[in-house]
Picture 1 (cartoon, rainbow, N blue to C red):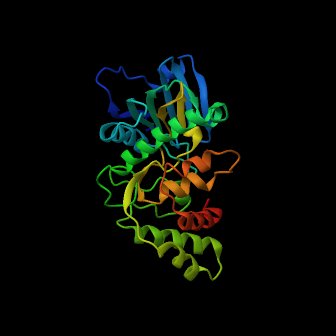
Picture 2 (cartoon, helix red, strand yellow; picture 1 turned 90 degrees about the vertical axis):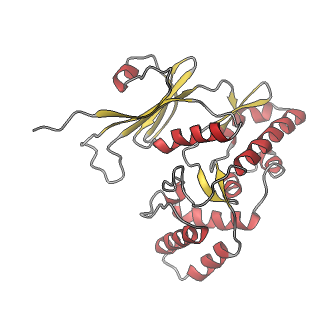
Picture 3 (spheres, one colour; picture 1 turned 90 degrees about the horizontal axis):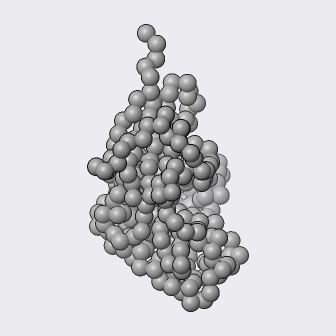
Length: 282
């Protein structure tokens, strides 16, 4: 008996949405929005995008629904999400045997990354005030009892991408212990007491976190925030995580970082520790 044909397993579907199969999607006009490795985003209508690939995860679709339910943060509506597979020919250790398809609202506007230089001081202040309010809403979501992604799922952050243990972790101590072990295994030096002291110096609440709060993930139009996108790494993390991730790749070319300091509680020591870890682990 030969291998069975790939099948669709629907996880999310809005009542008013007619499911689009991979075959039907391939016949639709597509405008490429993003392509990197196992993640592809294409615009398939004036109002909808399809995000798909073997590195797309169902947790992102569930996260978007969770954030829409618990906050007023503008995030894309999820029309449907399903897995398609298995594909037996994918025998690489890192490759999923399934593709995940997510059908989302297309958010009109430009990324803050592109538009920041065109904004005046008052417009920048308005945008940052809106973002501060959205971050506060995210922090206020109840339920931080573990570290991981939605529905008690593993950590999706890239810092653990190449590590065997991705959680979920019952506490910050367990999360830190995994980071320490991963770092020391990779670094090979006698650095464990130093890294341990760096990570355990402070205790933190566990809060819901976007985990990739960058200008290219913020869509604005007419001087206002119209959408916050790319929630694939989001989940429950120590309260400093949003800050350390937002500032890890901040290159200080402009005043974005300075203004962000006024919209998010800073954790300077934790950020320096995270930067040291990420140099080795990612």
